[in-house]
Length: 182
Image 1 (cartoon, helix red, strand yellow):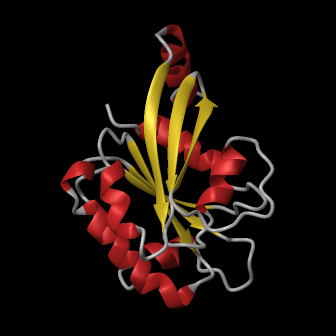
Image 2 (cartoon, rainbow, N blue to C red; image 1 turned 90 degrees about the horizontal axis):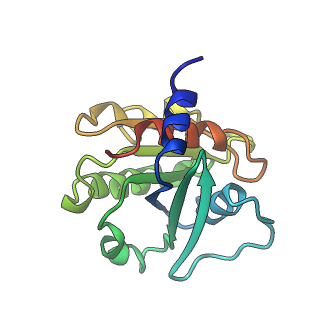
């Protein structure tokens, strides 16, 4: 199956490349749990991120420097300090928290309007799919929620996942590898 494997082989032959990945979303969306799963670390007893976490994650011969920034309301104004040189934006949505879909939609819309993130590929992880009542990726992406279909200035993908079980995370990272900013 050509495609991702060919891309990864070609990149392996070149110098090891580094990408800067910005991991954002509202508080309690599961960002840090996702980061720990991607880094193959234990993901238990995680407390809200006050500030940021940085981890290097190797994927297909590429070193991903993942910046997990706290999502509390008081920290969001500082997100713009991390936009420079971002290759991929990963936005995490708590699929089970229907009451915050409007807030997360507003935050994502504001991010996509930022000059420092223009054209940066976007992966939306529809997290917590393992919980009863979680909205599907189709429900989250529709016009009354995130309205992802309106995005025309960048590559984007929504991926269902569960940070707790790890399901869907690798599919999302495969998309990242295919669509990273040139």
